[in-house]
Image 1 (tube, helix red, strand yellow):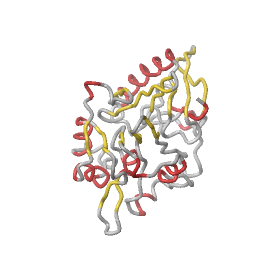
Image 2 (cartoon, rainbow, N blue to C red):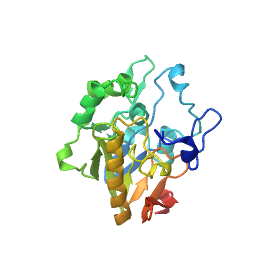
Image 3 (tube, rainbow, N blue to C red):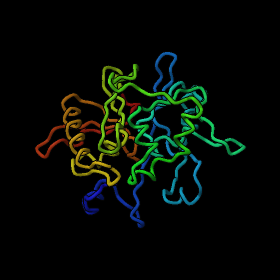
Length: 261
């Protein structure tokens, strides 16, 4: 998760267990806007076999369905599923198997949104990312007719604007949301946790780590200048944060939950 950064450094913010594993979240975001109910990303799902899940040691009581229910909604209420990118831990929950073992859409009334560049990248994967793009997560969206593509030239989804970044994977999309006179950016894998704020702290999963550093540096400066709220998908402790300029570059400012806004 921290690429070439030594454990003696990254473990100051993200402690590992005896197996050298850190705890991470798969935090999604639900946006209610008029008659639209938009879900951003949907986690890992449950379709793969025991061997696959054995690599990840899933734990905790949270689930996407339970979280939706706690917010007063169900799966059939979702109108749009916005996918930042199609790695299995971001889109696996959007397709499930029915009692006959056939794939079906978890959110049967929703449009599923990606973009053409990333879809091509995911369906004809490079060897480095092939294990992250699972056909059972991706192809049923198209086969069912639920898949739709966003026009990235417009840099907007209507309800929110979109920032595209290419260092982690081709044309990852980060929602930039206006809420209560503030700007919230859903960070996906450009910034997995507060521990990744220093520029060199870049994941080994990134296909173009130098580009990630450049994209992250430009974005963090913009975020510090404008007081953006960064919504963290993978940070198991911190839901949101802000950043600030320091003598050492952009660094963590405050951490808080979205409900505190």
